[in-house]
Image 1 (cartoon, rainbow, N blue to C red):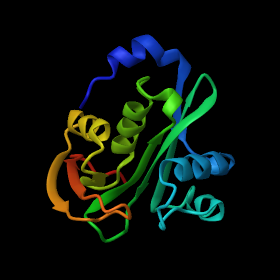
Image 2 (cartoon, one colour):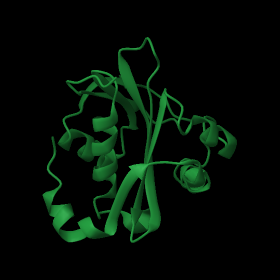
Image 3 (tube, one colour):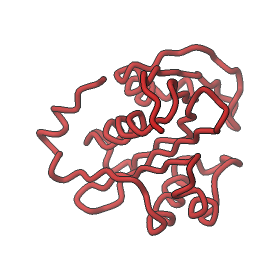
Image 4 (cartoon, helix red, strand yellow):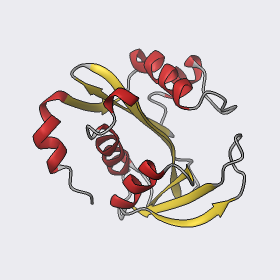
Length: 164
């Protein structure tokens, strides 16, 4: 897996990554809506609260110097062979500090399936580069998948473990 040593040396003591709790719902909601303003699948604050702690959903949050910096959300349906990586969001002011890498690492570690699957806009080069560093590979392109008409790349990563 991608080594985070460079970020740990520079920012490690200032970064805190943990599983979300209900008190994080407002921050997750706000950052989701900034990152995906027109997405019809955005969750409400109530839905986020309901999903936190639910066995099929995982929300992991990141803080930089005790300020909310981003989150990653995954969803594992009982009979699906994969975990869906639903969203990975890092606030602009924390980009380049390793928050996204730490969040992605913890999402992969917490994955309950043999495969984690993500969709990413084909022009989101920063995200694609991060996913590739962690061993994701592209398996499909879906034309005009997003509301803005952009194509989606479907990327997979073998996790090689199943947590109970």
